[in-house]
Length: 70
Image (cartoon, rainbow, N blue to C red; front, side, top):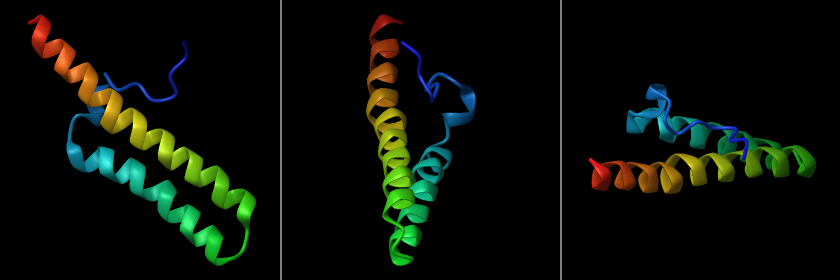
C-alpha cells in the first residue's frame, strides 16, 4: 500500500509540525468555502482530514506498537 504521508519520517516527530500540516489545508479549505468555491474546499478539506488521520491516528498506533515491541 502506498502512503502519501510517511509517519516514520523524523520530520513529523514534533507535535507542532504535525498540527501545522493538518491546519494549513483545513484553513485553506475554509478560505475556499468563503469564496464559494466548493470543489477546491472539498479537495483541501479531504487533504486535511487525511493528514489528520495519518499524523495523529496512525502515528499514535505506530508509536504504541514500537514501544510494545522494544
